Length: 276
Image 1 (cartoon, rainbow, N blue to C red):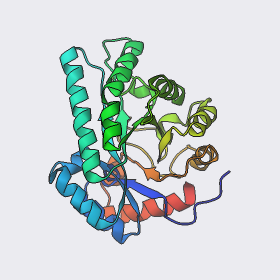
Image 2: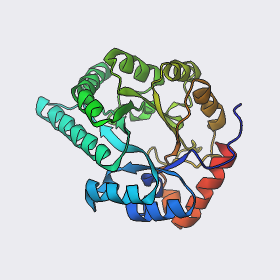
Image 3: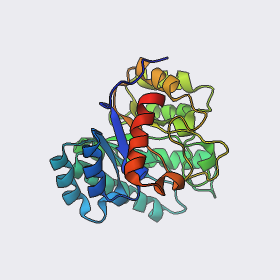
Image 4: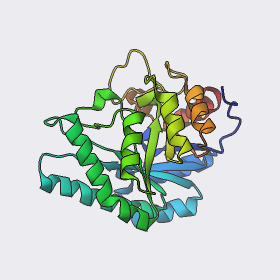
């Protein structure tokens, strides 16, 4: 097991985790609570735009870990696939504007097609935007999602598939994002994290917990310690493979969004130190 976390120096919180707060409220409350890093979801940029968001973030002193999210490449027509590519190019511009060094890719799937075809369209889409990402100084993290999302959210469902895709694309700015919620069940997870990390391709690491029973497949994630994921063990595998980046708390939860968000932020900090 890895050494326990003793401070908040690597803690990053996603704006979606405190969804009721605006970007400005996230910035103010994270900084006041001693949280050093933030991952920004694109909807949090919309009210004031990427340029103003970038100014706010720079003045806050927060470290911007990544922008969520790009992807959703598969579609039922070439025109729609091009729309997805264009949207990802806009996301790259937004990431550069706010100082985010990484975009997390939720890759998408077309339920009318075999998964293999969706995976091909995902790879083609990433290739189409990878050089623009490199020119902007932005990396792209392929995030495998739990198989329960394989119908429409992502045809990439294991670390092995994400590693294979990143290796085939073979681009300096394309790697993998690991989220314990999606991957904890996989018997090959340790080997695939080590494979990814040793190649320098583990770009980011997300934590939360798997509640039981799950009441909603999207909006019932648990805080670390709420469920059955051995988060410290998985963190240990990542760190032993060379990962030393931010540890990102990404939690979709109707339960926790209904709380006073200041109290919720305090719970996140405590669970990060005790159960991560």
